[in-house]
Length: 117
Image (tube, rainbow, N blue to C red; front, side, top):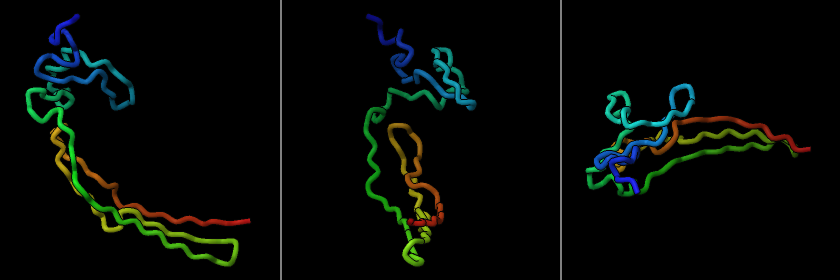
């Protein structure tokens, strides 16, 4: 059985990723040397904090979506939709990752035409 200090994921103080994804979409194995490299510092979590294994709870938040449909005759309908209409983008602090997270998508909208035969 290997000790925790021989484990590349947990070295006794830090939790390291097993793999990371580069900007070109290629997977690379995370090594012990990378754990001390400043370029990869944001991938390493400090296991010495008390809240590293705690679950995050963000409480309630809202998202308002709108969809309007107009029927034209008996075979055609046109619809307009707007999602996150009030641009509610709550930012919550995640204790487990020590980062902020945006919980809702940005405002986006669209239209569709339905034709029934």
